[in-house]
Image (tube, rainbow, N blue to C red; front, side, top):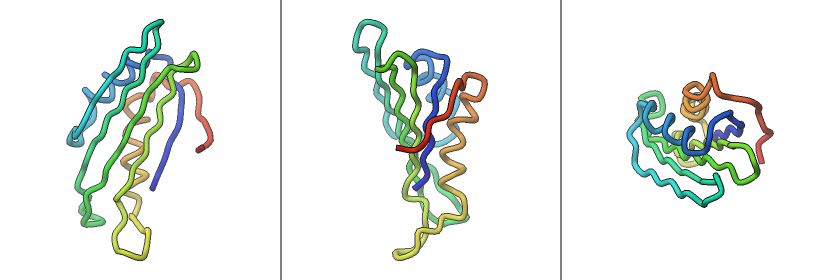
Length: 114
């Protein structure tokens, strides 16, 4: 599992739409909830096949501005090969990095993993 957490200078919906519209993986699910008062939360789920691991990997991206700034959390899972070894040859990290690559010009800060 690979994870990345960062803040952006976009609204939650702006980050949601930018990732949704610019990611090259298969979009499996998307939902956005407007909570009123300029707050919202969006979730995107992508899937991609990685030849290097002979596996499909899932990427979950959550964007919200519940604390006054928009936070983006990207988590990749299912990218490792084998039953006993969690070795993914960099596929999970690559999948997570694809989100920060899309939002690169909008990133305002990085957070430690939870």
